[in-house]
Length: 213
Image (cartoon, rainbow, N blue to C red; front, side, top):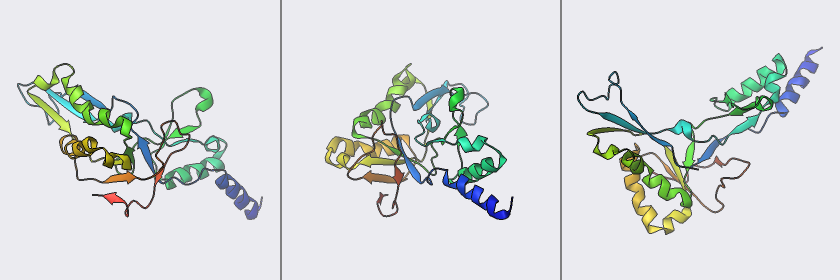
């Protein structure tokens, strides 16, 4: 086939791919992102002679919002190369989603602290704020002589309704100080808010204009 036919096929495969992906909002949907584990002797944070524990916000446990069906990835070499190039253009980080055989063409992109933002709805704020201390209390972790807090720089987003809730607004600074590294950025979502049961993800736009540092 001539070059024109090849270019046409490439164009068709490319048009069959999803729209480009921006910087999506991930949703805080449940407890369990904070995990406590015992520090082993070979680790640099281990304190000899003490029972040492570590508390960490495990971003890999955040449910990925970006989920794609890319059957062309498995059609033939030509379609595979085009689909793979598109995945790289979206910033990479995609993995095949574990599941049933008929879902093996589904890709997900896990949360990435350098790219993604975690949205905390008003209903989830109490769980988000108090879960770390709750995890430490479980199993009497607060009585442990040494607990290392793994502080991560995570970009957070909140609804504008939080600014009308004095208590939630007041506790946010110590949440950032005690459990996360900073200063990081906090984004305020105005108007329509993301929904947990939505079939689509939300992308962050014009973030340089709307960020509170």
